[in-house]
Length: 320
Image: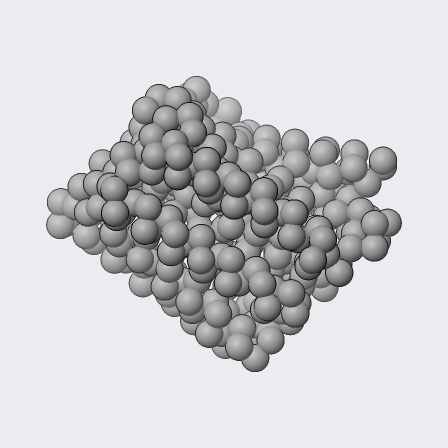
């Protein structure tokens, strides 16, 4: 029970910290004249991954590689199956293929890159450098195509920034929001990690299972909140774009930084099962989007059923 309370408290702290950091950063960017395009692309698109980043770094530094990697892989699976599935059930998510072609292909490419680099059953610092170079190349490509090429996806990232309202207005409140957000993220990651490890030990489950499910869901709440809000507002591009941007940063950024700080051995079940589920869900999402140019309620329901099956298998067949 105490471990469950630690997990719940950690999730609350991480969610609050992520929200405060995003709002403070958006307000600071506006004060400094940063374009709405760049704010949406970087701060919102990647800022929602701040809980995953802090938790994975904390786990890596504390020699908990199963949680560090499981958190990222599980978040990417949950983002597509759980979050987009739920959003599509709320409202069908119509999308123009041109808007998502770059980000969708990048998600699949990053997933394949993960499979290639973990072929040796570990992520070394050299692998981390490849991830980070890939992230840098993606950011340059994204900004240049949207800033100078007039890509329709530019409006998507501007709209992502506009989904976040009630920003702090004074310099003092902006600084307080950023500092408080960072502090809550750091404390929340430590509390969540303690509870997650305790649950794994008490139930006889591997830390990989807890990282892939419980921790991954907890750290994905910022993506969930922004995407669900966008779905209720009928902003389909924002809901899908937020998830794709988060998945790109999870793989290339979070794993890159974590493995750079501490080489990460990869759990056998991730090699045998979860990495293939991650790649498969990315391909299924692209298939749904590009065949019908939308994610229907039926397809959203299928994604939710898929997540239920994945969690069930995680605690039974692959629970050891």
